[in-house]
Amino acid sequence: MRSILCALLVLVLSVVLTPAFADSHAKSEPGVIHMVVVWLKEPGNAEHRQRVIAGSKKLKQIPGVLDLRVGKVVPSDREVVDSSYDIALYLRFANKADLQAYLVHPIHKNTVKEEFVPVLDHYKVFDFTDE
Image (cartoon, one colour):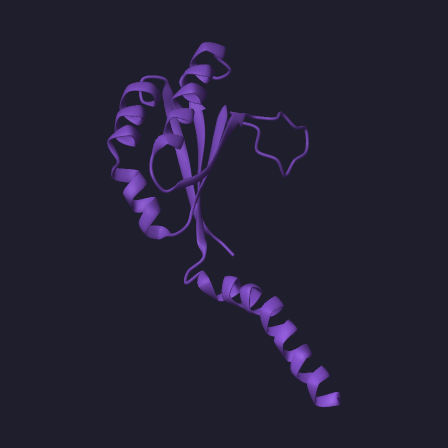
């Protein structure tokens, strides 16, 4: 009876744990986060800010983009917070190859050229792994 219970326990554990173990090892490389922080030529210009936000939402159509968030700065008096920018974008990709494909995709190139460049003073990009 004891051996039957042990065999049953092993079977149940293998059914329960195998998917969790497989999922934890299926990811061969960490995901990638692509953040862009934007300063407008006319800081605080609501029309230009909305232009960049609307243009950014088009980027969600590009294959490989798992998540896209965009919004305006949250002003802060805290010394550690940089509130000097106007808009920030957050994009998540499964891997570096998807990020690279996104960067050369026509929707990305056209959006940057047509929607962003005319109103941008400068921007900073931060790419890091999602571990």
